[in-house]
Structures are given as structure tokens and as C-alpha cells.
Length: 152
Ligand SMILES: Nc1ncnc2c1ncn2[C@@H]1O[C@H](COP(=O)(O)OP(=O)(O)O)[C@@H](O)[C@H]1O
Ligand SMILES: [Mg+2]
Image (cartoon, rainbow, N blue to C red; front, side, top):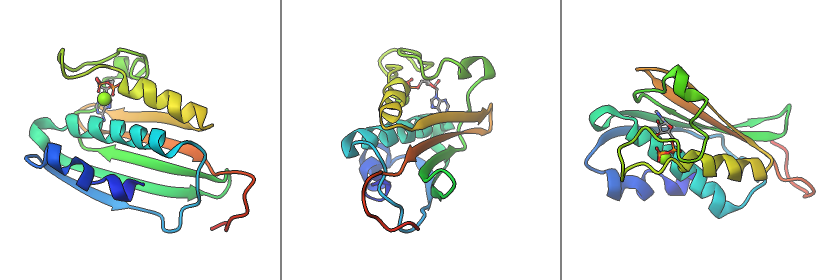
């Protein structure tokens, strides 16, 4: 899914920016729980935030996917070299309507909705950040149960 979303899905909106997108995708990822369209919205939100965190549109986004054998889950990470998140704001970022963006730009709903979608799929979403250096958003989703499938 990430493959089809980036950078093509964002290039029209952001082609004037100088953002490098690096992809480190695990080959042959198993199918995860959750609805395709909803999960697409989660990745869109998180990648959009990463782009918006870049000072003057310069920076790098690294998208990583991994399979975790111990938990039979898939981890998707979006790392950016943006401005980061202040320690005292970290606890609020998943709250509805929390935004640090100017009126008209941010709704503060992106991460709240993403958190809900991931939670309903039985997964987790978390953030780590160092102010001035960047942020990492990790989404962990359980692999689909009750289906015969190849375990990587
Ligand atoms: N990658 C990121 N880098 C820095 N800050 C972020 C990042 N992602 C989210 N944030 C912070 O979390 C807030 C909430 O994000 P979100 O729910 O998507 O709302 P919005 O993007 O409309 O502000 C943002 O306003 C921003 O302060
Ligand atoms: Mg957002």
C-alpha cells in the first residue's frame, strides 16, 4: 500500500519541496488486520505531518516496514528530519483538535483519527521525537488471523 502511495500520491501537492523519501520495505509482508482505505488514511496523515514538519521543505523522510516474528505483527515507521515535537506537547498529539499549526492549516484531527483506526485494527501507534532533530512515528498492526498464509 505504501508503495502505491508515495511519492506519487504526494508529488502533486509537494513537488516544489526538496524532500527526499527513502524506503526500506520488507519484502513479502503478510496481510494485516484493518481496513485498507482506513489504513491508507493513517499513512497519509503521518506522512503529511512529516512533510509539514520540514523547515522550508528541506529534509528526509524514511519509511520502513518490518515483520516482527515474536508478535506476528507488522511495524511501519515514518521517520522524518523535521522540527520535532516538544516534550510538553508529546502527551497531547493524539488528542482531538490538538494542533500547533496556524488556523486553516491544521485541524488537529489527523493523529486522533489515525490512533482510532489503528486501535480498532488491534494495533498501536506511538511517537518518539527529539526537538530540532526529527520524529519517528511507529504503527504496529497484528497480522490477519484465521487464514492460511505463508509465515515469512
Ligand atoms: N512528524 C511530526 N513532526 C513534528 N510535529 C508533529 C509531527 N506529527 C505531528 N506533529 C504534531 O502533532 C500535532 C497534531 O497532529 P495532527 O493530529 O495530524 O493535526 P494537524 O496536522 O492538523 O496539526 C501537530 O500540530 C504537530 O504539532
Ligand atoms: Mg496532520
